[in-house]
Image (cartoon, rainbow, N blue to C red; front, side):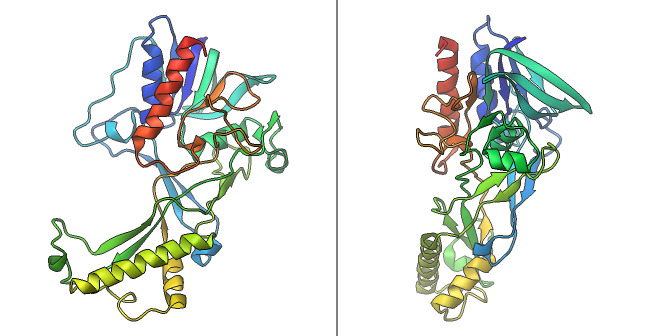
Length: 339
């Protein structure tokens, strides 16, 4: 029996677990789907394909998320393995499949490791830090989510929570290619063949839901990219300004961006070329409205001893890792105080 179980060993989850384990009287377990740190291999990633996106002229895109102990910083070129206290127990290459519940209270986690099904129990709290793609999916597989969707996925409903998987936020980026020979005029220090149009805070909201309760089956991802007209108009304005700025400096975009573009042609081009950004948020949104999943203390509404502390609780995309890490640090302080 551990005091705390943390699911997800990225930068936020690992930092939270270490902070909890700073109290020598506390026993903490960390469950991470990825491998332990290694200098000899690149950091592995999750890669999930979306459903066809009407806003992208029916194309599908891939959403990715890193996995591996310590997060992206730990896997950098000059990184070192994260230091582990003596009272923090690590379970790597361990895929969490559901939160264990006793009535309306979280009591532990079930995970798959090396072909075996294992369970860990927590006396004080379970904290999900698996990210905006994994934390909502884990709640759904645990029977926490919209009742009708759980029934469709053959998952027994333990707690009807309509907001799980909703309000998924994915940024949009569009590469704008340049003609050869244009780079010198831009005085770029590093070789590049395009500039990037970025929609960092889209108005479009998507959703995530289970196709099946099998943990090896990826969820159905529909970020609904460029479904809101204001997102498209923001990108069109960016594109017009970028093209005008390039021409003013004697730089030309490559085809098909180089010629005169009507609004209709530019819209079609943006929908054809848009890609998903790497940062994803939402799915377990924080708030006090009927579709909120966690409250102001990051506690899952209606389930005792269960918390979420990652980008899935955010209503806007974070500008950097610091905002998400701060969530974990603040939660760790509250949990150690018993609040």
